[in-house]
Image (cartoon, rainbow over all chains, first blue to last red):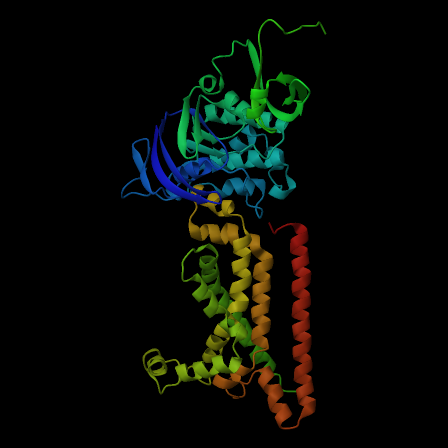
Length: 288
Length: 224
């Protein structure tokens, strides 16, 4: 179990932000941290990994204090894995070299073959990172992180640089390793569909504080909806007609036009993630 | 033609470059990652030889190394090194004189690397030293090459500092640039021409090698 209670004053371009977070993460849990950019999500991961020091607080992993009043364990000794958005592979080493670099002294290297196999990157073992696609690089980064068999896996928007279909494939890999390596995983994302697909639990952070904490359906599901099915999508266009407004929402590869009211329009901006829900009475079905 | 000044110059440049590299890597690494308030001061001290006349540096070193004062005396009495008019003295002076040429390219190379690269290595459990030697330095090869060559070439061409603290002792401190000056003074233009031509060809050859090597490193994509 991971216990985090941290306080830190962050200064950014938009001014100062006080990060004040307190939560526990159960062993084996897949926890998603969501929130606007600049809410302090990445800083939280960096503090857990030991790359940034909280001003005060405690970080305790399985009864072992990582950070506290007088303790501050180095990142090298925390035995947690961290995957960055920009992969951070070492360009001077091959794929296999990147994985070997992560081996502990006297660790058997059979894990390398196992991971190359699981992530389906065996054929790429002698390539350099700059010869790989984004999706391949991220699989290598994930494999490299797992070499030391960490108990805790931290993912900082690992899929946000990838296109949608690649993202969905990589989500399957994440699910697979989370179960197979019995990991506790904390992932930062601002893609609700990703959060819904992967998370056991979602914590939403706004301006440095936890605003929501619960199961995915509790956090994203709006209880006033009686919809029987729903999709998440992104608003790509809002058109004002004479009497009404039409929002174009991209769900997967489909563009859906939805009539919205004036008050709804005020709250929506292009680029917002939304849920498109339908009540049971209006769908039409057609045999194909 | 007497080759000993040329050989001495090459020896001095080689020893200086190797020692300077060992000193400069930790220094450049510290400068690239520090947020200390004294950083501008340290950077200024390192860059001073770029703007200061070599004779000024040579003069201060002459005073410092002189057995007539405490430091020079301590060096000679306790450690047993005489730095004035000697090869070790030339090496030390050249290291100070060429310091910015070694530190600056390495520092800017290290600073250009993504912070995530270093941090990944730490989180993977690897020490700072291993990260530096296995990840950071191999990814700034062109910067290292530039630093090595500039320091070597700069030391080859050094004149003022050497003249101040080395003097003109054949086989000990009489380097090629001094030899040219010496020959011209004695109106022996033929010998001066020979030394000058050798230095010119050497410098040109070194630079051509660097630029072609750098092109190859960039093409093979070793540089991030």
